[in-house]
Image 1 (cartoon, rainbow, N blue to C red):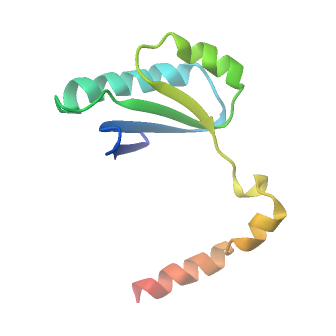
Image 2: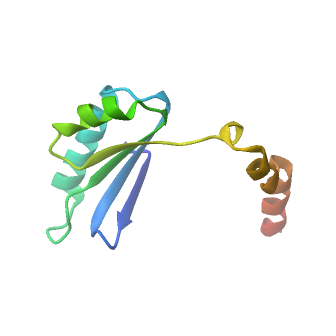
Length: 110
């Protein structure tokens, strides 16, 4: 099953996102392609555009990923994300720590 599935109203299409730890692997494209095939065949409405797939991984060689994506017939892309450890110190200091976040969530529930 896809990790995240959204509907983009502007594009009038489902957006399937696969979250991956570590380096990009070409096998991720096959998995995502399968999800897009199923979404388009079984879920997509006749008036909607084809589904879009995004692989979000920790790191990727973009030249390699571009070549790997090129011959797929479905719209797919590869992007990377950063963790808190990758953030510059000034941004990290602007975010509340985990304890503060948990306290905020706890107070909202009460």
